[in-house]
Image (cartoon, rainbow, N blue to C red; front, side, top):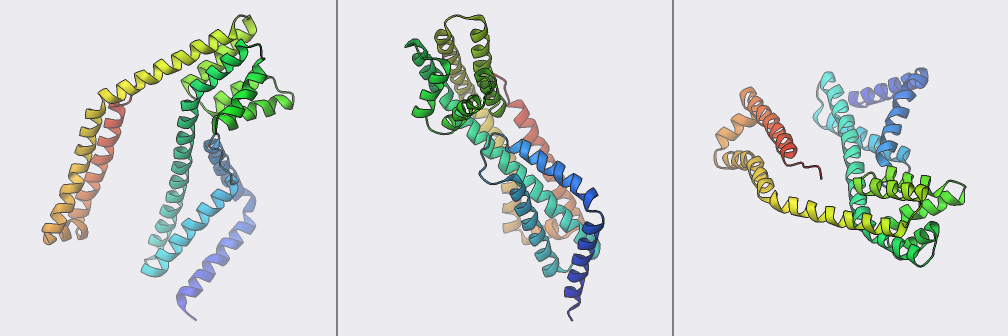
Length: 284
């Protein structure tokens, strides 16, 4: 029998025996991992269960590690490193995907928030209640605003106060604009007064803030473009040298000094990128 197949069977049996023996202790980190991903998935409206996503990511990472091990047949210690790197890559990739999905959904929601507040203000001016105004918002706007405000209606249907349901939207879509809206609605509902006027004022504030952010991005566009060029320059020059000077390219990729130099360049590139991102970040 093929020795590689025997090794794979032995490793599978060892993993199965370890999981059977120490299953309870091994499940706690898995539960914590799933809980962390569920926290990241909050507000993303992912249709698939987070547990299934974690299982798919783990399966893909193990398949990639197995293919690398079977193809290159590295030493045992390297096998462990390949499995660890594959698992770390799956964890990072899934976390990044959830983060990007959440940011995209949050951006779309914030672009609809001003219109939602103005629609609620108009509905209140004609004599409707706050809940009825939110129902009109769900009928007129598309997702994600429609989905989030439908959750408010659904929560009130099971006995939760409408102010608490709106606060839950602020938790699911955390942003200064939504927090300001939720607090304004709660304060005005408690103290009394013209809620329609308050919502109109909050909508005006959100529009002014978005204009300020757009102006800030236009003023910093040159600096951000310069930063991208500076970050890309070492990569472009390195690729040019490898293509035009094969000997230098071989020295960079297949010698210890060259690999050390590439590692140092990568570390400096990451540090420069983080520094530039910090410099160009502004709180409005």
